[in-house]
Structures are given as structure tokens and as C-alpha cells.
Image: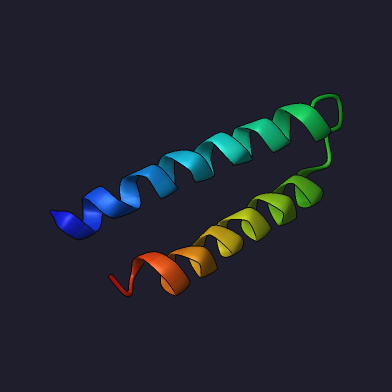
Amino acid sequence: MGRFASALPLIVGMVAVIVAVDLLFFRHQTWVWERLAANVGIVLLFGAFYFRFVARS
């Protein structure tokens, strides 16, 4: 439960950032691959942050 509780704010933040980037930068475009690449990049950044700071505690 402790590991999940420490990762929950990170997951919620990741979802919020992905939605915000989609709405701010890709609102009127139909660029599927660019959106997918941006979302995968955000997930990779949050994953690196998780494994660097959260997973150690």
C-alpha cells in the first residue's frame, strides 16, 4: 500500500500533464503520430522520475 500511495500523485500528475499538452498544443490538429510521440515521451519522463526518486524509498 505504501508504494501505491506514493505513486498515486505521480500518476494523477502524469494524466493531467498529458491532457493539458493535448489540449494546448494539439487541439485543432489531427496529427496522430505526433500526439502519440508526445504522450509516450511524457510517460517516459514520468517513469524516469519515478524510478529515480520514488522507487528508492
